[in-house]
Amino acid sequence: MNSLVSPTVYLGVPTLWVLGVYFLINTMMKKPPMSVKMAMRIYNVVQIVVCGYMVWGLFPCLGLPNFCGINSEFDARGEWFVFVHYLSKYLDWFDTLWILLNKKRSQLSFLHIYHHATIVMVWGMLLDQNVGCGTTRYGAWVNSLTHVIMYSHYLWTSFGFKNPFKKYITMWQITQFYSCLVHAFLVLGLETTTVHKYAPLQVIYQLTMVYLFSYQLSWVPPCVPDFNAKEGEKSISCLAFCALAEDADTSKTEEKKQM
Image (cartoon, rainbow, N blue to C red):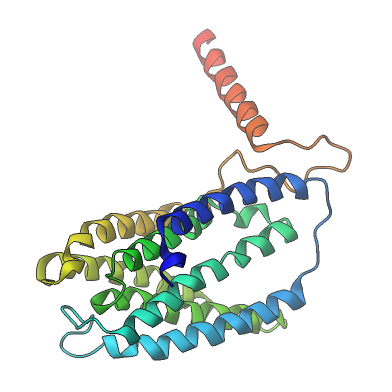
């Protein structure tokens, strides 16, 4: 367990993942979209089962009036379920694989890459610092519950069924981030265990998530190539695409100066 939450792993593997995304983007530029519907259905079922297991296992951190388990005791059981949650963040990377194989550029947003890369680092660091328990379980619990809802929706709609509650799922997702932000402030003001010193990190991270989810939900950086380029067109790498975008901006600036 300790080797899986070492800085080499929780910092190095996400970095390699981002590079892998870059490589697969350019590889798929030359290939047609792949059909992965059945694989995605199996994946959705796996996510529902794994996340349901974590919802059940992390539930003891909740209670009234201390809903988030502020100053709750550290125990091996709680740390185990946080560790499972950390491992599930690697499982989430299959989301990106499906996007790339389906060539859905619009889904490859900055929020998607940022969150999937950094959340592994956050949970890995907490476990490495022996604070992956106590009140930190709340964030893992609410995120696991959110994933049960999300992947149940994906599985349901993959069979062509409509979900009348679809609009409420996005509302729940952003509510999750706000609740984690409130939790971070509660830890900052009330927590007396060693978790307290990590509260500023939680505040900053949740602020970025609230902002991105509220205002930049679908923003895809211009350096992400267009997967739907016409057949026969030369493949454009991310770096070349950025250079083209920069040249275009420069041209516009020069035109304005001349006017």
